[in-house]
Image (cartoon, rainbow, N blue to C red):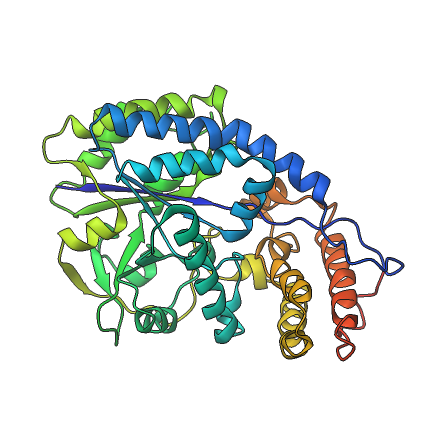
Length: 403
């Protein structure tokens, strides 16, 4: 009896404007471009997807259930550029069939560099969820599903009931990602693992005509879910919300697929849909799962190489968090806010030099001509940000010059 747990990540970063060493203003972010992209994604994805999911919840009398994680920086931009999207999420919340998850407000990698900043961002996100939706999330989702035992232990101490992670084959060692697991040395927190094969069939392969399973229909996908019967309790489909209408365009049939999927899944009497916290409440833990090193849901390696795979990324992240003491000592809220916006993982993703199987993915999201171009632009901004504290100077490797 597999429950289907559908979770969507909703995120849009504050993109930087072109910033040179000759710029002196504090207007680091490209408001025009950010507004344009926010409205475009709202039109292609958020508005029609929210409408569709609300219709499905109503059509199936609440038997269709879903979960979202909405970053704080996305909600800020939606409030400014596309407020009807927030209204759509509020209508979904009112159905009682939608769960909102916790994460870092700025979609950051702060857990790797500053536990104090990590906790503050989780608290900021919690306040945003309460103010907009009247909820206090009980399940945590870290940026890009970055996860290890240490994170689980830390988040367990913060009181969360559940945490999402990638179902990495090498760590499972033959066990199923369709079960619940307990992280080592934790008191209550439970792991929900992404079924990456089925999730990525939708998120990445759906419109690929070279894929052997193309076209993917709701009937076919429901049969794959039914095949889990007896070999797992929950099929966790975790993906970016932008998979609906943005990464997979409307003419690919993605909205039709989701419109038909609940009926096909629920046609099997043993199947249902559950939110993450409902899955935790319904099923026992199958055992302990040890994740000693950092994993994520990114690329084929499922590690941190999408953000820390080269010297530019490592330098940029190190210098960003090296500014923390002087940023906090300045007591300037605008300065602190700019520093936090610069923490969004996207800025470091744009600097990736990975190619081969992952290259197309990185190119799709990258607004820069090259990773080096991204790095120089970012570091020019960081240089100026540091100068505002009057104490810090950003350091760069000698072979990475300033432009």
